[in-house]
Length: 130
Image (cartoon, rainbow, N blue to C red; front, side, top):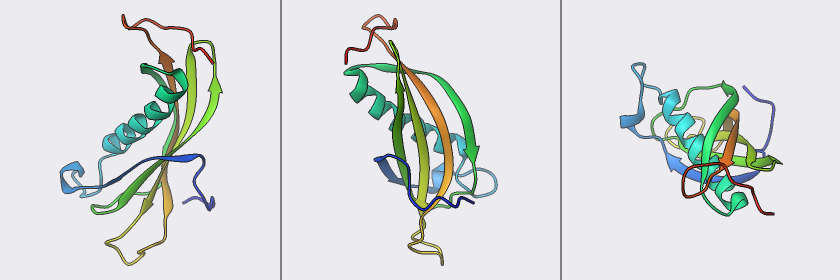
């Protein structure tokens, strides 16, 4: 569990965890959470790059609590670094359980750093014009 009171960065996406996204234990599958993180991070990277980006690395991935069906899953992101062709984004996932006794208390369930590279129409790295 995190002592952090508020998410880092801006809200990038919000969705509800659904039964189709569960693992064998009935919790939301970690791969689904990671895909939401990648989608949210890429939205921020697209804005910075002013165009298409591709995910090239994920580091420091950490899952701290399970996500339940019906939880509101909020993906937050903070721009950490812009290089010549790359963009590094810190992504956090926070949950607001609406179908559990905790109702209303949000908490962090995952975090990672995502690195994206700006790419041209041929899928090759391109310089980020800032």
